[in-house]
Length: 87
View 1: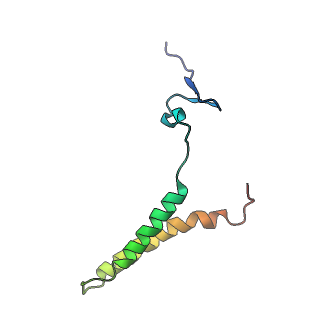
View 2: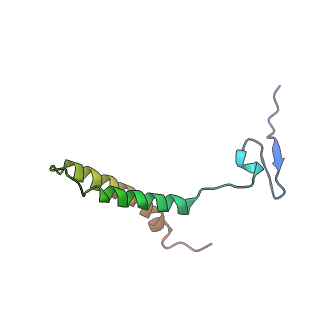
View 3: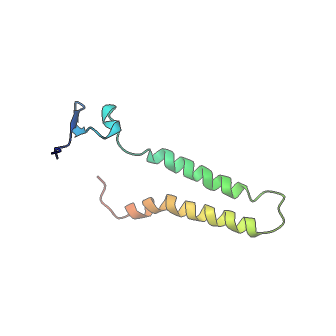
């Protein structure tokens, strides 16, 4: 019968599950600042595509819509943090 216990890796600080690949080099989490910078770069790049040789405005509507949706998701964490206690 298989064991139900999780194999642990001793990283020196805490015992972490062995199936976490980052447990061996000690990094967990996301690079939120890098994601925000890359996201705002994409918003600017989408809005910069307004400049071009196209005559119709269908492309402009799509570019503006994608830029607005991306900007919404970049600003949503800031709006969600308002009014909370700082940790």
